[in-house]
Image (cartoon, rainbow, N blue to C red; front, side):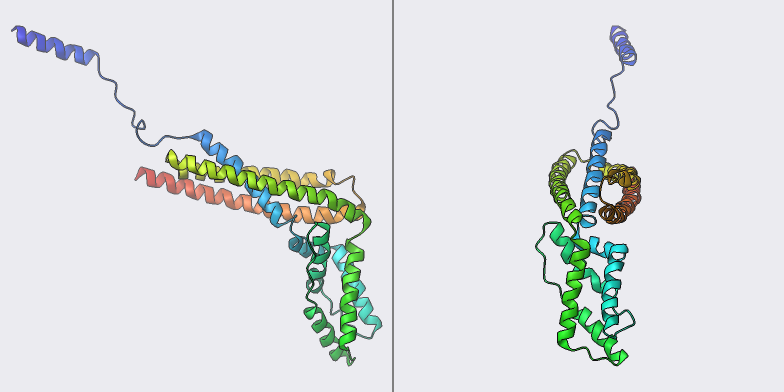
Length: 276
C-alpha cells in the first residue's frame, strides 16, 4: 500500500508540475525581421547607386538621351544644313550618327579620357546620300565634314556653364563610386552572417521586396524634386540635366518594381519550401 501511495503521489506531483516543453522554433527556423530590414536598406542603396552609375553618370547613356533631346537635335540640324549648302539634301545625319561624338564630349566633361570617334558610319551616310543626289563627296570632303561634326558637338556640349557643372558632376560620380564599394562590402558581410544563422532566403525575399519599394519611393521623390534641385543652374544645363536625370530615375524606378516582384517570388518560394 505504501508503495502504491508513493507512486500515486509521484504521478500527482508530475501532473501538477508539467515539464516545460521546447518551442517548435527553438531549434529550428527563427524569423529575423531586423536582418531583413537591413538587407532592404542595402538593396535600396545598391540599386540607386549602381543605377545612377549606369545611367546618369555613364557617358554613353547620357549621350543617347541628349542625342534625342533639343541639344542633340540642334547638332543634327546644323550638320544637315552644312550638307545642304553643299547640295546634299535629305538630312542624312541622324541622332544615332551624332551620338558617338556627343559621347566623346560628355566623357571629357565627366573627367574621362576622350576616345577617338569612329567616323565610318557618318562618312558612309554622307557618301550614300551624296550619290543618291548625284553629288560627288570625296574622301577629303567626308573627313572635313566628320571633323566639323566633332567641332559642332563641342560647341554645343562643352560650353562654359557645362564645363563648370562638370566639376560638381565629377565629385558626385566619385561619391557614388565610394558608396557602391561600401555597400558591396556590407552586403558581403551580411551574406556571411545570413549563412551562419541559416537565414539567407528568409532575409532575401523581404529585403528585395521592401528594398524595391524604398527604391521606388526615393526614385519618385528624386524625379519630381529634380527641377527644384537644379533651379539655380543655367537654362541649358538645367534642361539637359533634367532630361538625363528623369530618364535615369525612370530606369531606377523600373528596377525597383522588378525587385518587388522578385522579392515576393523568393518569399513565396521560401515559405512553401519551409512548410514542406
